[in-house]
Image 1: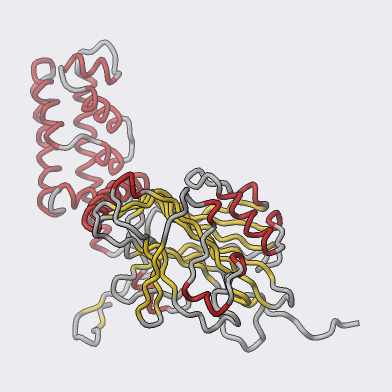
Image 2: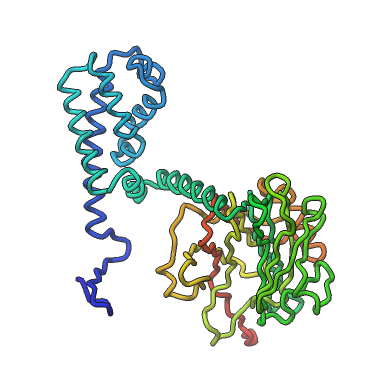
Length: 430
């Protein structure tokens, strides 16, 4: 039953896994109207005197565009009414089909279809607020439609933000490689990051390549052992993997504001002249514990990533040595950061900020050869190079990947594991 929130507003509690009454009512209404429209159009198509029921023949008979005929046939061949109305042409296209069918179909069939279409239009433009509202609502129950809906809208957001910010990239790469340290107590972590075909669209724009803050939890924060940079210079140096960057190697400028260091792409070239590939790798020593003590809190190790600028693809990978949390498969969590910033998977208050997109977590298997990525042609070579520099065996790594098309600028993509196991230090029983 409803209770009162601190602000005095009524709050309705629902059982986990069940739909609120309004949501169920909307779905029921959509199904009923969709079924009526589906059945009426199915009868209409059956009564059109065509040689066959192919899109080409139907379009030729009615003298309408083949796309309209194809969408109509796809819809009426679908038994689920929600899926059917999700695939149908919009009402303007359906009215063109009804008008074209009038000379060859009984009047009562046309009248039935027109009545069903009018009821459908009233639902769309009334309760759902137009076609945009309809498309958003129907994706709640149709995973395929939801994926298409999300992709189309994220692509529009990418184009708009790229134009507004004056920068874009084809790919942003974020990889964490976790390997046991020499003592076998914690993980050393390589952060492998980069951008493919990043470019400037306006001359005055500064493109942020990386942002770093001090990491006091590590014995040697962001120790750049791959580039043999002395610790005293590590804070001002971005450890480029020059042999994997575009040639000539991109020039970066470091801008310091307090404890924050931002590396930006130098120059003011625009368009194709400014396009570069940038890759870098840094090492955090002792970054995560392999085990926890009996009294330690249940902290979930995780790797989080997101885009610095509008990008077509965010490619996130987490690669772990076989002895790092074996048998512990991760979970993908997506958070909205625009109000409260970066989220921790251990903070239950951030459940309200969870986003539920179409992205999934892919298990890549074990061995570096399984980590190939079409978006980053030399990715496997980069992983091998980094591991060789550190004396690590890349064939003992298992991997997980998230590929996000047109990632949102305010989204945090988090690959989270269960808390590490407890190490039993007691002697074994005889």
